[in-house]
Amino acid sequence: MIKKLLLVAGLLATVPGFAGDAARSYITDERLAANPGLPFSNGVLVGDTLYVAGHLGLDPATGQAPADVKVEAQMVMDSVKKTVEKAGFSMNDLVSVTVYCTDLKLYDTFNATYRTYFNGQFPARAFIGAGSLLRGGHFEVQGVAVRPKAAKN
Image (cartoon, helix red, strand yellow):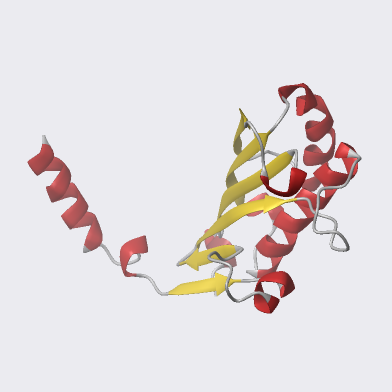
């Protein structure tokens, strides 16, 4: 079984366009540019696939999550949207989203905001309970977007 997996992995590595051989572009926002010591990027573009890092909905003035979770949900989705658009994608290009939440009772509150960021079909999604998040956040959102074939240059 292990030999078969290694063979498949080796074959995929030789396929043109496979993520392993594509150039990478790193997406950063102003906060990351101002803090070059932070060990992550907002997103990484590999070929036609954008990997969106976990985003928090933080108040830029305080660096903390706002007290109102509805405002936080909007801020976190705005942050994801900013990264997606900076890479030349739209929110509708997201194919998979993971939401980490410190209180699963906030599911409906988050969904009320989340659904407004998409037209038509929604990406696949997981909504996962998390013990705690950085800076007092209630939500962290990460995702994967794929550029539609018709949008290629």
